[in-house]
Length: 118
Image (cartoon, rainbow, N blue to C red; front, side, top):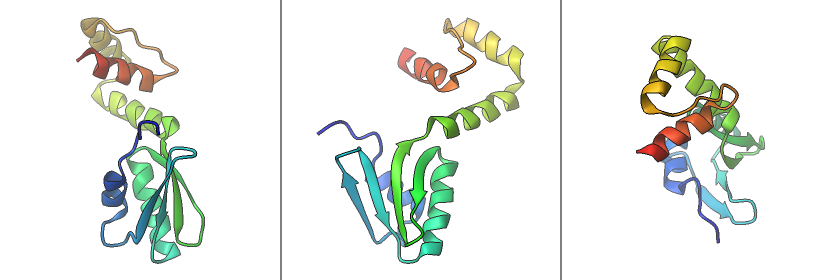
């Protein structure tokens, strides 16, 4: 069995502890299936997961297929954060101070390199 990238307790907390009926780990593709009591709750839970950068699919029958961290969503969140800090000047100045190169096409790789440098 490989290393799980998401913790089922984290998924349960984000989806809402009281609203999740069951979470099943799928070792085939390292994902989770989340069973909700109603389809409307599943849609709200997927929105909450997307807010945290976690991708998934709403199957419209009260089940969610949570696939893991979504690079596209993380790019958007990190881009918004960096823009809020002051734009391009802050990006390059902070990178130069850390000694880390910034690759504009992949802010996720940049963020991971900062975490690895710690």
